[in-house]
Image (cartoon, rainbow, N blue to C red; front, side, top):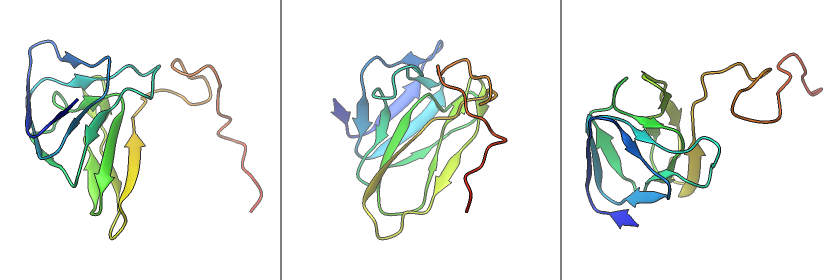
Amino acid sequence: MNFENFEVDVQDDLNLFTSIGVNDEVFFTNGRINTPRINPDVKFKFLDDNIYSGEGNNEHVDGYAQFNGDFEFSFPIGDDFEIKPLIINNYNNSITYAAAYFKEDPNVPTTFTNSFDTSSFQPS
């Protein structure tokens, strides 16, 4: 399901169990958009060079977000009540990106079944 404009104004957050997209503007007024962290297929999608405003520690995507467009984009993502935006430079490319922020130790993750050894590097 896609929307033209989308305003988030909820008391106890908006929990998504299926992906939705927005073609024009997203307004974060109150509350977060939550997607299940165990299912990266469920995303809040910023479509067609979409823009947003009003993001903050209490107003962001808590889980997976997706962007498709051809300009620099800052994902309004975070974990719980902490926003941690991720910026991509996507000039002159219409590529789809997805992102989520996990506030946890990758060596001992609580979300994923596999751990990531951060002391191990591939030879260059």
